[in-house]
Image 1: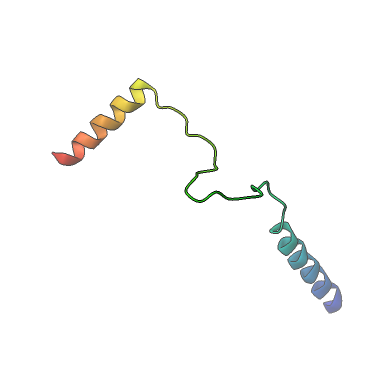
Image 2: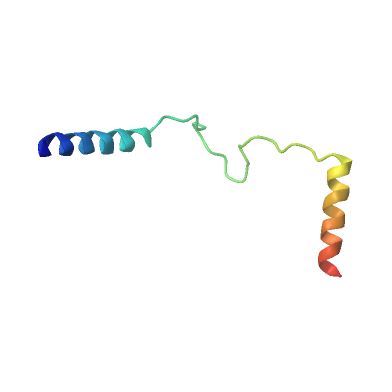
Amino acid sequence: MRGYKITVIALATTALALAGCKDTERPAAYNKGVYGGKADTKLTPKQVETLRHRGMRSYR
């Protein structure tokens, strides 16, 4: 029974370690000074106004 528990723990640990090694899409080459990520979404005028008011509250 003890050997079975050790085997299960070893298999679970191995599975977790291998799950962390998943292949993700990464650029093949990096250009220095060039952001290669997704473009930011534009803020709506309402979001800009909300942020402006929030910022003004911190200065009072």
